[in-house]
Figure 1 (cartoon, one colour):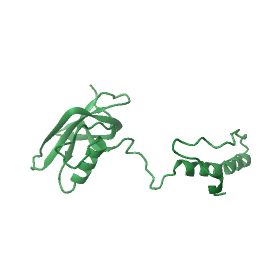
Figure 2 (cartoon, one colour):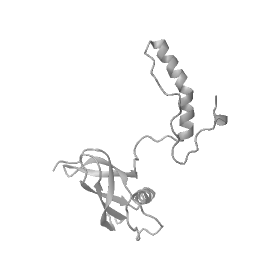
Figure 3 (cartoon, one colour):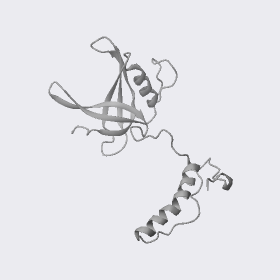
Figure 4 (cartoon, helix red, strand yellow):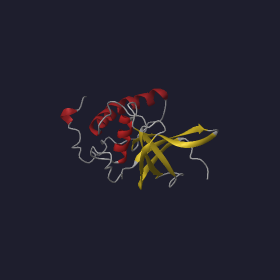
Length: 169
């Protein structure tokens, strides 16, 4: 079987595949078996190792949270049922190259994340503002006009929609 290529994959924990131990330097560590859930490598399995040193323990605990751990007792992880993202990197050891999990991120993690994303209402307002400007650019460039609906996109569930009084224009 070929080595899993470097990249980001969706994954879940393999039920009851968690082990605790020590590193060669005597530091506490955890090993968790994970299975890729989508794409051409769906079903392939890897082990993630988390370490509990001063520099790594916060990230290790955060990774366990992404997997679904709740509470504060690491010896009671409970069912780790969340889907999360793994970042696979290739590493060389003793002259052999192997795939290892370098990072555990939240589902969809490892992608671009803006500090101040727009909510659905802000995005609709922005789209309305840009609509006329985009049409003006097409006229200048000689592109044929694009027919679009003047109706705003439907409000998302839980979003009451934009009030005309709140529109910035």
